[in-house]
Image (cartoon, rainbow over all chains, first blue to last red; front, side, top):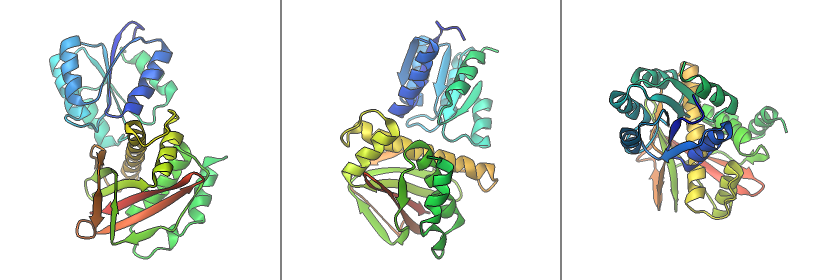
Length: 122
Length: 169
């Protein structure tokens, strides 16, 4: 993913958003926005069409898998990466089936995150 | 300090293996909790006496439900100073009072721990569970009318004791 791409980070945890944004900024990405639930992510994506979206699964109002389906329905070119503490096979399958490109288990491993972001276009 | 070594020693020094009628679900939860605290908060702690309670009430509810079969309710409680120090140890964000950020940090740890617990059960092919959104509320009470068992796990740090509760539905 190019360093000038637009990124949305969606997590209900302030800490999780802060950590993920710090990692991405450290990698050289600067166009990063944040929202705190799936509904806001869907609305943000409709209005702004970000290139890359990070979604947690367990969130208020709308969960990450449902948000993934809706975002992909609106804009199938969006690259979505699920970042969650609930990385079971069941959740992973649901996320990929909904259209997510990848799944990262919390706590985030910085190097793994870098590899996933760099290769999400592939 | 070697976190894995600390983890085993902390469990061995506690009464965790000597409680009648404790389910494997609760035992696994305690093992994973001790491991996750060592890994992500602080390995310099011991476990207080783990007990099965009939009822419990607190002033601030910091909780998360584990859903599926079996379901459970988890929460964290403790004196304000201990909760603040715990939040700061975990987050490193300069937390000095039990404000929104402190409560968020505590719930972030609970969500992380519960998530990793659910993943462990899934990997061992024991069961497939999920999590509800973490909750913050005011006064709360739990008792055996709502839950099959209430287990309190006191985690004694140098800065104070933080109590973890796991209630089986």
